Length: 236
Length: 236
Image (tube, rainbow over all chains, first blue to last red; front, side, top):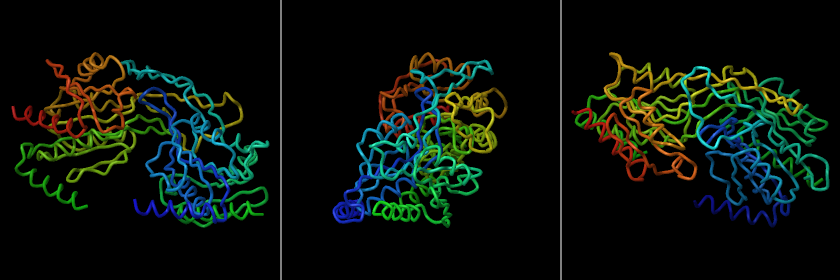
């Protein structure tokens, strides 16, 4: 409680004098949950820690931060506008409907697909062994690609995250080009890395003309270093 | 920390002198997560609160409690054997492989179905709008029905939970007969009730010859009353 009040006060002061004072930053975080019926859903694994840490780091530098997050078990960072959602469509509406941003960082693990129909009542199990309901999936809105698409409202800097389990750099480089975002922060989330849900991260920062492998460090340190890089880029 | 140590000590004393001393109780709790690939899964909504409260209530009465739980954000109750799992198949193995129980209470929201295949690597999104992967579902093991099936190893009392969104009593009564369990605790988990993930519950206890609607109360109170009923039943 006291720590939060101090952080909120510090961030409010920084919003006047910090290097990102006057800048609006959007951070998306967490997974999305895509309902199949009132009790079942399709989900992505994401603790939200990296996105929450980044929102805090940007606020520490004075940015006016909007954090849009799917379902997580984390307290919202102090001094940040926090918008909670559950589905990709809700996250899309909140990200697109919150005004203009100078920088957008999409750390959220948005479900690429959702069940085409959400049943109004719990789908009942029946006795026949082949009675499982077929799930037809349809694509969700692509928040990163929409934010990064050229246009007058585009944030100056759009950063995506790529969680991969193989061919990390190749997949992430292709993703950067396909989505038209400026940077991609790629990481290997294979279970044996312990990164998913863990306290540490090991990322590769991919820009139009560089591929930079960072050492393994805490998610807070990744957030601070990325926030510094964003600050330098915006000031150039 | 201190509260937990006191609770553990109290429960250890009760295990010698409480009304359920010498009785082994199995409680299943939480959801199960059924992986589609390393980052995606199919899940049920369940906070685990009712099951955790019941495990604590049974331990308070002196039972030797094994709590088998899917992924939740709750600390394990003090003085209880806690076994964590993720999938229905893991929960099934832990529930069936932990020896004989006098009473089994299945509060877990076990996924009825799982994706037939778990991809070893993240399934990649491709450009085509109809490129969503088909998900073929296969039935999961039925833990409640296996525990309740007649046989020398059957617990004396097997209690199931039924989370419904419509025709609650009819569905739960049919479930009791189909699963061959002794009691069903039924509740309406429609989103507007606020029960799923909330602090309160409103249940109907269905036995072979009675249907008893309990008033809305805290999940801890539901747990305590149900533990008392179990104690009375086992002592008869």
